[in-house]
Length: 386
Image 1 (tube, rainbow, N blue to C red):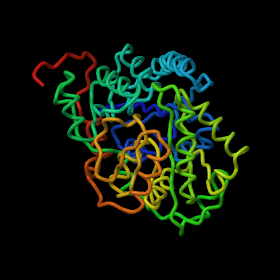
Image 2: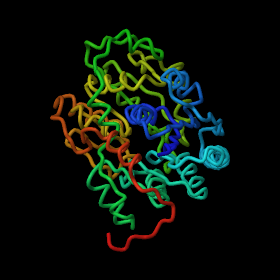
Image 3: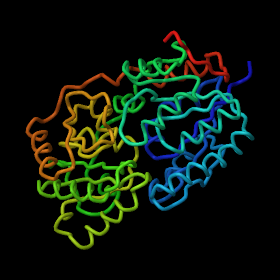
């Protein structure tokens, strides 16, 4: 029996981190031939320094590394990057001719890759369809669902939504979240020395309670700079050590990054106890999530990984609006006083009981089993009986 070729495009540091268990199992499966394609911000040093080298060192077969990002950090650059992604990945997918392309989540680059694969009559497997979120990401996620043939969802609500979109129930699998499976499996111990070896700024002592901030642009909003500055003032007012992660490469990142640099240079009193990091290995990131007194911002890590870890979260604004959340999440608007008050409440509460709303054991193995054994098809039909 010929091996199935599984193409796995990786376009961001987050997707590589959350997918490590899955790609290792795909690599090890005797009936699967895994091919990684790298693109997007994972090839840009300012977002994902050395990650491509780490992937190679892990023994993975990188079929292509495609420089498909138009720099600028704005909406025009984002749209042009999607267009360039479609062109570059069409050429490589045509040459490779995989049996399946695995698409993750709701990134705009992933939508472009899914579109290219669909026109090339390649079976598409989509991970994390059916979730509800804020900004353009929700539209992208649902668009990928309508292009995909196999669906690996993370929770029962998402499963219901995918079926309601006319997808064949026989092709929808509730496997749980890869992010949470990783959080449940890695060693969460981490030292101050390890953290301080990444990034710049205040030297942290992890024996002290500390805050962690991960705030990304919201592509459908116009004041990402102002929203970041409000969060910064709120966090600074609490006079606690802070680990602040650099925003991702979505439209709006340029103004947010500029604001962080400006504040560090001209208002050092606000950032005196802050340590700024671009990225860390996935196990270190989970370790920080497990040990922080509170995660602040708008990252999906606060919704998913922290649900399992029991970490208090203050979710700001609309980027995660509508996501299935456990009791550990408190929502806040963009006012500095509201953010500070929400953080204070979460600090007073402390850690939460672990929630399993996104957790299923062996999520990655469940996906591998389907990819190895499912009957593949390319002609989709709207399923009216869902």
